[in-house]
Length: 269
Image: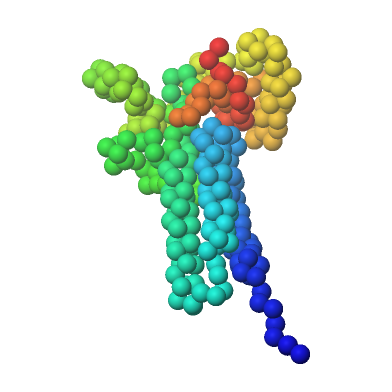
């Protein structure tokens, strides 16, 4: 009577190892996803700054490619040395891709919302010219965990500086991405008041989206701080632009000019 055991098929053992690899990869992807969605790219910056697209690329590499390679290459009949080489290679490639993806996300995440003339601009670390980083405050770093700060640009200190800023804008380098132009947002409140538009203007410009506008405004009016408007009809708005999007707006409080909410809508009307 043959008591020898039937060898376990390679694919079955490889599937178990790949499933374990998938579980670990999914946990890592979930941690990164939590960081991206809750801290680095909170609404609406996941779409506005491209954070969600980058996240899906990382998830595809980390959760799919790594376990798939493990399923293809793992073979229990190999020597321990050969298995160690295969596993090290797979994990190394996965870690390198994950590191590059995290670096890209850190560079693209919003650091500031800067009011400039008649709009707000989302500024990431990658937007800031290398020559301007020396003038940046200490919190301007891609790996911090803080929320985007609301700032404004100052007025030109001289005619030469104004001309230089015009030529810089023509070259695609706006004052809002240069830290030496930044100032406290409260100093620009008079300019915000002069430029911000009433909600009725938006309703007239988009009568077909009246319900969506009212819903977004009502949501933005929730949880007012002390001295702020509770009636959504009193909110003001301005366009919000970024590197990847020009069709968002911010809702502003009519008293404090704090950003109360966001909506995806072309504000240049």
